[in-house]
Image (cartoon, rainbow, N blue to C red; front, side):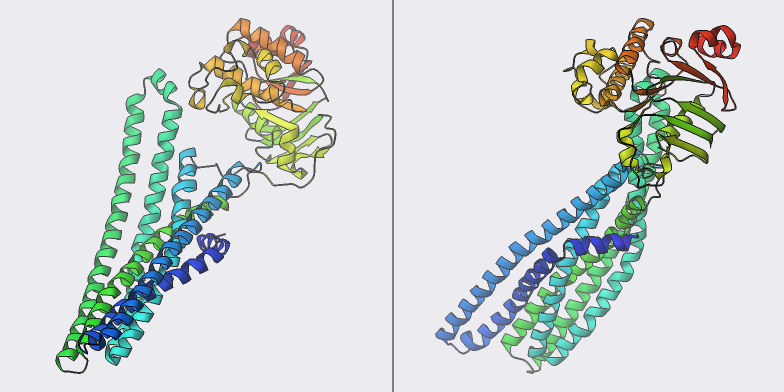
Length: 549
């Protein structure tokens, strides 16, 4: 999919509204063009001819034209705006569906703020392109009616308009090229600045703890200045395009008025026809300026459509399979010769309903294993099976209902603790995670910033437990809590997850002590030892150093 495909799909999705809006816009512009023609006829036939009956008839006709153009403008603009807003809304939904798709990939290499910018500003600009297309049709209809009216008044004047308008449109298209390029750069820089700002705000507490406020401010200042420079370059391109277009358009209209005046002076046209010609020349300013604005909107819309297409066509993080997990899910996991981000030939089996502790010497290996087991990434080599079925063959969305991977730094949403821990098992999950003392109605704040690190971690764990998946993968769920709370969590976790497959990736001895079995992964990413926690502490020095250091 390209930016052109995005625009084409948006237009086709709103084609009915756009067609009606364009027709009403054409009616409005035609009425505007007929107005000076009727005024000229009134001057010649009613005023110069002193015909009161013709005057009343022509004034009534002029009133009817005003009613038609007023109605057309009102309802045409309403339909055009609705088409634009609906198209932008549907694009936002497409973007959100792509970002949230279980197969992932869209978020890679993009900050959340940058994705938000694409889903808001870029989607809005693509939608605005539809309104521009509707107005362009009306403007062209107005030019056509004006040219026909001028042909009726004077053949040379009409031909001047018919031949000069395509030249003006071609010039406007050429002038929009630099704006399109600079608009794309402007949007990219603005999205980057927005993403960095959101990232810094999200990590504000950490920055303050490290005393890195000045460095963060300097970083944002540089990125913001880049965004400002890109915006100014785009603004200069837009001003240049509009300025040149308006100047050329003004000269074109002045030329029409000059030619018409010479014809009137030589007696080739009447006084009323001169009034019509001058009125039509002034009227032509509006559709010509509209077409200049349309070129600007379409240039920006094409640049934004390219950015939208770039997100929508991002390769999947994992290959979307089509099979469903076994029903019911037993929860048996088998890892065969797994090779991924430092893991090399890992072999591992988790029994159905087992609480397995995995002590990993390298933190990066734990994260890589979590991503593979939770299928946030497909391994470079080897296979992971759930109940005998390779994860790569399963539908990622269905797999998410069977396997839940809970990283230790998971995000909390604004609202209360209860809002972040939905489900019928909320009370039991809060108790097992040691979060019941917080109170379900306590405010979590944006991103959980109203809570301490330990409180956030407990709420994140409670949310995972409340989901009650057949297979739960937990990565260091208690690194920010005290020893007493950790012991309570360990006991609650074992009780609540009894009979359900649970994998604990941690080096915390309190958690490993409640596991049915513990596996030690060495620095090469392979199984170095396995057994009970107490036995490993007694018999394996590497395990002892890892979990007691």
